[in-house]
Length: 85
Image: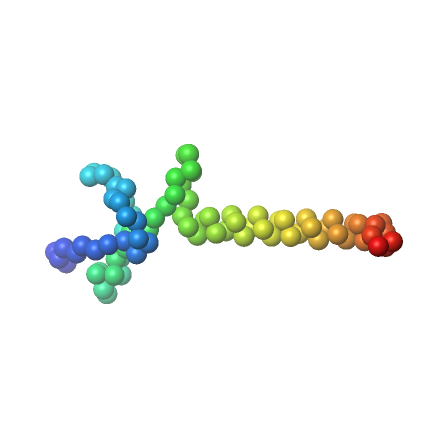
């Protein structure tokens, strides 16, 4: 307690995006406070997203796309489209 630590971001942000007085979240390892980190978020209008949120959105969209292709392929197969090829 009472010690001051400083460090750099693990995500390699080149410029300081925070202004003096901004409230920010800091993840702290109580056993090793020198390993503390500031998580980074992306602002998209009024929405704030973490890199994990973006990954979930991308993979969910891909899953929905693959599901749609499977359904369409099944319907085409059941109705006999492509049998004359």
